[in-house]
Image 1 (tube, rainbow, N blue to C red):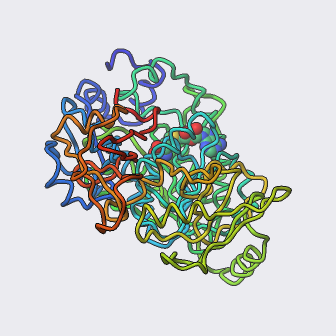
Image 2 (cartoon, rainbow, N blue to C red):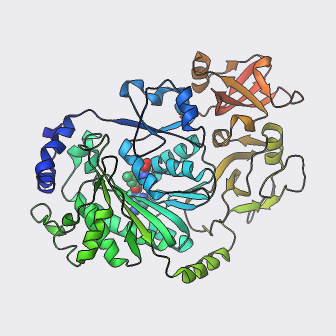
Image 3 (cartoon, rainbow, N blue to C red):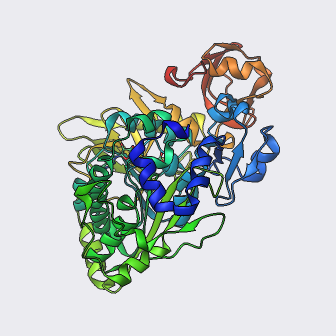
Amino acid sequence: MGSQLPEAFLTKMERMLGEQYSAFLASYEDTRWYGLRINTLKCSVEQFLSLSELDLKPIPWTPTGFYYREEDRPGKHPHYHAGLYYIQEPSAMAPVELLDVHPGERVLDLCAAPGGKSTQIAAKLEGQGVLVTNDIHSDRVKALVKNIELSGVRNAVVLNEQPEKLQRPFEGYFDKILIDAPCSGEGMFRKEEDMAKAWQPDWVKKYAEMQRELLRQAAVMLRSGGRIVYSTCTFSPEENEAMIAEFLQAHPRFKVLAVSPEHGFRSGEPAWVDLDMASYNKETEGAVSSVSESTKQAVEGTVRLWPHLLHGEGHFAAVLECSSDDENQLLEEKQCLQETPEPFEAVKARKQAKRSHGTEGSRPSVKVKGQPVIDLQWLYQFMEENTLDIAFSNIILHGDHVYAAPEGLPDLNGIRVIRPGWYLGCLRKQRFEPSHALAMGMRASDAVRMVSLSSADAIAIRYLKGETLEIAEERVIRSRSAIPLKGYCLVCIDGYPVGWGKWLDGMLKNEYPAGWRWT
Ligand SMILES: C[S@@+](CC[C@H](N)C(=O)[O-])C[C@H]1O[C@@H](n2cnc3c(N)ncnc32)[C@H](O)[C@@H]1O
């Protein structure tokens, strides 16, 4: 496909790469590498490898990442519908590894859709702490929500907001922030040929302006001592080394944490900070002239993933750490945040940290402004009759929709919140309807009633297609024999939840959502 690449792009790459240019160009004739990442919220790497028949080879920079063969089509397997893995371009797995996420942290994924990196962060949080995942484009947020739910993430808040508006509620809030920035996408030309055809030289400047803003906004939301990973899938230095140099110059509290150039990674190139690109894009000329020599040198700690040097597409990443000198000032800011009013315009009822079955003490009713008191008894009744010990703390109602939100969020009044937490289901007249997201966030052992299918059996596909199934009484597995057979069953494939079914008299009514079905 080398011949289809834009002329101006090739001229620039030749100037940047010198003697490596021919190897770079030759990589466009190589076959692509395909990757998937095992979702450790659902199963360990070892469990998946012993379960799956896919021919997988490890991706060196991601312990949960594996190359697969294109012809194996893992997107067409019941394990995909169980959320056991996410299909992700191999190089795209690197930025979250560099973010160094730990359970319990507060993490922001600022440009998150469709959710590849958010689901990777969620796995590293292990259900503890908060993942705030945002994207500015509402159509792309739909895919983000779906992937968060498919992956069984319980502690994510999904937003559809301009980063500018997030600064007030989240000032100094996050331990880690990922900016997987919108970019000119030059590193994806091999994967997406249409992008190569559409590319224009002035994209670089357009995206650089957005990236500058995103970095500035993220810096406000990071706590002292926290970390930002900035990543792009493009080669242009204006969006990479020069962007980071400019940020460092304007934000002296930040420094680059050097990424070790292993696995075929290459260091960022200080000389490209002010590479004379005048012939390529006159308007960028001089944009970084005020960057000091030491700042330029610091970008050597950033990292580039080149398609001719490793098995993956083109990427760039920088790890930026904020110094903790002004810890006290930040602490004061945090205290202010804790004094802010209760989250969300809508309602929430604080529930005890862990619900205990059979106790009446933890069943709050909630009042929505201007609406009658809403009784959550149908929710708790459902939970008692259909689930075992699922822990959730913060119940939030948006209309009839019930969510379990992570603890410790600031007031999000005025922010476009798409999912304030784990979506549990909907309160109907005299009953509670569980959501698909509830099933996907459960483990098989959380259900009191379960139907177990095998991926090797055609009935698993029939379930995923939405068909009603004949299921004999003895195939309904109950946690105790006293549990009635009739009712909601968690349907599992190879032991992993894929959705709900309602059993009655030998038939399982299929509750698999229409938009998720196997086609
Ligand atoms: C490279 S993609 C993100 C891919 C995603 N991190 C993943 O791994 O699946 C960049 C995203 O940034 C979003 N975006 C563009 N401008 C934005 C802005 N100003 N604020 C937040 N998101 C933005 C786009 O809608 C797009 O989904």
